[in-house]
Length: 277
Image (cartoon, rainbow, N blue to C red):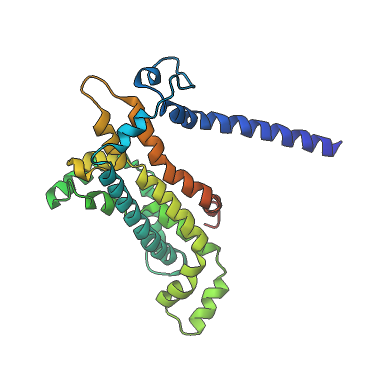
C-alpha cells in the first residue's frame, strides 16, 4: 500500500513537471514557428502556431544584413571577455573570502552580499555618467568592464571553496605553500565544476544582455546582436517582428547548445549556492 502511494505521488509529480515544462517551452516554440511566418501572420491575435504559408524570408533578411557578422563578433568578444575575467577574478576573490583570514573579512563579505540586493537598472545611469567622463561611451570596454566580476560569482565560488576539506589546505600550509600556491595548484584545479557553472551563468547573462549595450553603444558597427536586431527592424511606424524573432532564435542557438552540453554544471551550481555558509 505504501509502495502504491509512492508510485501515485511519483506519477503526479511527473505530470505536474511535464505541464510546467510545456508552459515554459511554449514561448520558445512560438518563436520558432513565428520565424517561418510572414509578418502579417506573426502579428495576428490570437497568435497562430502553424506557418501558413511557410517561409524562410525572415532568416534571409537576418543573414542578409550587412552588419550581422559584426554584431555577432561583438557579442562573442564581450561574452568571452566577461566569462574569462569572471572565472579568474571571482575564483580568486571567492578563495580569499573562504580560506584567507584577514581583518574585516566578514564585514566586506556582508557588504558584497548587500550589493546583490541592488537591481542592475539602478546602477545604469551612474555607470553611463562615469563612462561618459572617461571616454568609454560607444566602446566595447564600456560593456566589458562592469562585467569583469560580480558579487553573485564571488558568492558561488566561496561556497565551493568552503565545501573543500580544510585538511587539504592545512597539509599544503605545513608543506610550506603560500596561499597563492594553494590557490593555483590545489583550489583552482579542483574547482572545475563550480567554474563550469559560473562560466555558463555569465555567458548566458552577457550574451543576452540588452539594456547595458543599448545605453552605452551608439555606433551601428559597435552594436551587440540583441541591440542590432532591434535597430535593424524597428521602423518609425511599426516593428517588423518576424525577422527579429528569427534573429532571436538564431541568437538563442549557442545558449541552447551550451545548456545541453553543460547542464550538469548548472545543476551543480544550484547545489553549491545551498552549501556551507
